[in-house]
Length: 188
Image 1 (tube, rainbow, N blue to C red):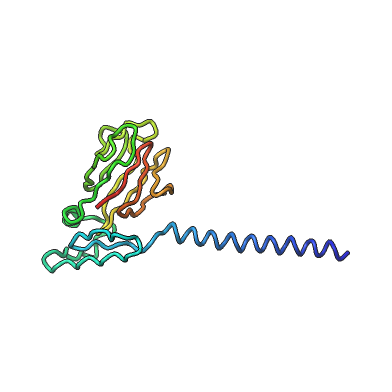
Image 2: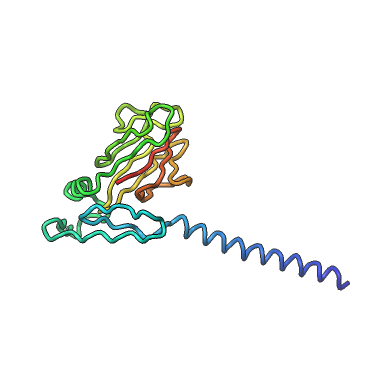
């Protein structure tokens, strides 16, 4: 009589242990997928440190003349004004660099403009004639001083640093973006 009770208690203990470990791993995965805090873009371009262990220097704050005017409160928080985008483009020069592709030469650079679209369609700013790329596959845009990529409901998805993204995703320098058979690296 005691053996079935002990066996049941062991099974219950193992289930609880499994759920506990599952919750920890899920929480860690969620935290890692969010990444580090967003990196602010300063007025000066900053070179990367020589060693990965060395902390990156903080960019200098923009001078009074370089600061953008404060938006009126009526403007939606994710709206992008031409002035902010022009400031972003002139200071950091966002671009995609082809790392590997069957259809493009490695090292090809694409300068990112306001709302750059990527797809198989000739109307896209970056045209990828690849069977695994949707007509309008993804778009890259700025919001305030950050750059984002958005999958536009593509069949095969958009992958950033090995993870398929859903909706909008902030991109940071050095991240790999996979669209179809083409691997890009985002640079500033």
